[in-house]
Image (cartoon, rainbow over all chains, first blue to last red; front, side):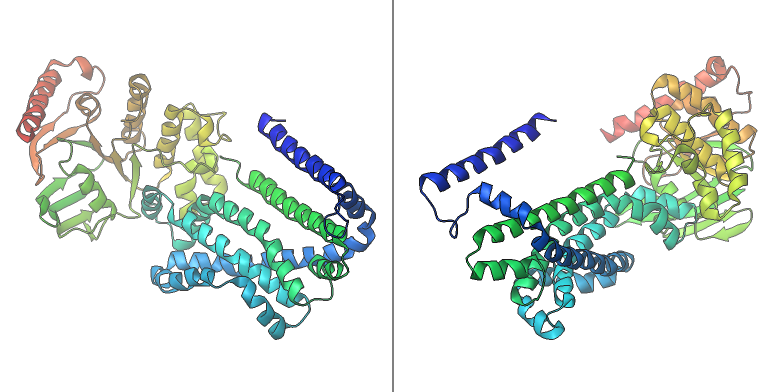
Length: 245
Length: 247
């Protein structure tokens, strides 16, 4: 393991130990701040309770990622292919980021109900922007000399897209996707907070109301683990796909 | 054969060429040499269709054309190999884009890899091989174009002297074995004298042909040919004169 990794691990360990000691010294009650050992116990022992909820949240996140990819990939490609479309849509794309997405959550629940759909859309809205923007940036970053060379070979737009622009943009796409998958969790959880019958966000709200703070923490641990796992998965995929860097 | 007549190009107030004429003999090797910034690269950009021209005609084999896009092979200083493709796939790119039979073009590329001593490296990506090998791969790719006309824009200027010597010989392959008609831009007078049948010395902007040399002596032993040494001294003096004037 690299030295920087050791430092990160040591930092985490120090925070956990301080947290544990603080809980003991100041005798903080469990319903305010449970000690890490208690959190760890609940995280593992309550797995049968947490797992089905985590499954629902994971499904929402993954469906959200798929949905946003289905929109972002063609949209970025069309924006790149037709500059007037890019000019027309760019202001909306930027403006969409100015809208606090969380504020949309109650509306989405009213429109789409308490089921999966509102959470999936919530996650998709959050991920959509970094993926679209990074992919478009990647396409545009392609060296002009290569594009001219492809013209000289008589390549059509689809050939240029497939053989040149898409592979060129892949590293950009993956960095956008990495940002996307880590924030996707936020979308799903906010959606669940506002109105749901299942999911880790729903479980957190329920546990919070009953002052089962250690269960809230356990849900956070599971959520973070899911986010990290997704991020690591995208990282692995990137390594598999981009072999030339 | 390629014939360019009355080519005119302006960038706002700057007149790059006014009535530039050029005729290439079929199967010949013509080199353009001129002071830097004289408009040689703009000429190539116009020929390849990067910029539109303001006036003049371009015709290839008697047919008037807007530009040579899709009609000429092209090789420049940057190898323009795609980093995500293996050397062989890079070399096959013109054939892939033209929709040629894959097996047949692969065979052709492999035999060229053999010729250019790239055999065994087919599966490597460009980042794994040396600059000279990348440029040899670019040369194979140039040969994979089915076009007779080849445009070379300082194809070897990024290489070190020794690698360059090796590759100059390979450029002659284009002409002798593959019967290509070649138009090359270079800054290197020695390279021009070594390779070409015809040498055109250009003026500063607005660009025109200042002097034309027909080099009909055999290509072997050219580096010590006294006549060529005289031409070299003369051309260098002219180019240096341009630089002095510019300064």
